[in-house]
Image (cartoon, rainbow, N blue to C red; front, side, top):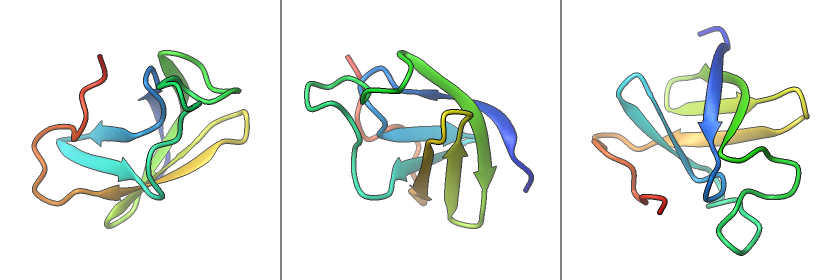
Length: 84
């Protein structure tokens, strides 16, 4: 699949994403500032970029040079964590 424009929800850090009914979790665990916010250099509440879907993973990239890999949560119907 070619990269498509995507707004990654970052309000509570970089944890998960949903795309076309599938749920993905960040490989390596959550990425945040230790206080439940996005890390320095990330927009809040969304980081705009592009998403490329592969068989069981999704890769988010943006103009700032961020590149994060997410793995498919097969059978998931909701996010693991709800950001408050």
